Amino acid sequence: MALLSRRLPTPLGEMLAVASPQGLCLLEFIGQRGVERELAQVEAARGSPVGEGDSAITAQAAHELAEYFAGRRTAFGVPLDLVGTPFQIDAWHALVAIPYGQTRSYASQARAIGRPTATRAVAAANGQNKISIIVPCHRVIGSDGSLTGFGGGLPRKQALLALEGRAVQADWLHGEAGGFAL
Image 1 (cartoon, one colour):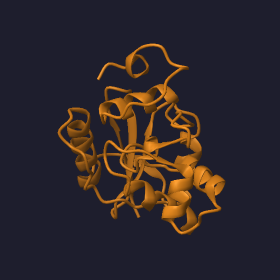
Image 2 (cartoon, rainbow, N blue to C red; image 1 turned 90 degrees about the horizontal axis):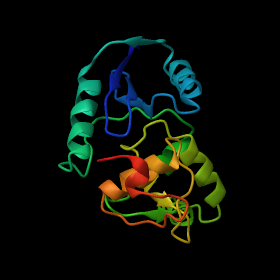
Image 3 (cartoon, rainbow, N blue to C red; image 1 turned 135 degrees about the vertical axis):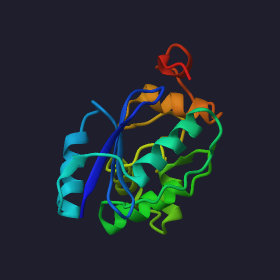
């Protein structure tokens, strides 16, 4: 199975998109910690090395991301080929169900997948999400409304939530959208 990768420019930094013939497997900010590990997991799970090149799926992801950052898209239609355990995939489906402009707590997400005592496991699964923005782990915040971990960094999380019109607590942050201009 051929895996193709493409670099995508965004206002928050360049991203790497990797797709199989079935869908998008990875979308992460270049330079963020853990991307090489995630890339290796995708290659192992799909039995193929990643090569550079464009596909209909990476082109669709690029188009939809550009619309999202321009404020013209609130939901994504690009096919996904999620790489993870069954529990992780359940947690990620719950992320996709969080509407644009809304947030949920990890506890709420755990309840949504029928595992109300699995809050920490859900948080760990979110940390393994390989498809940033489209599988919107940035929409999960602390139960007290505070920003919590995000692989792309808290300033990017703040910027994504600001783009979606969601105000969050940002005592740790000075300036609009973490210094990112959208």
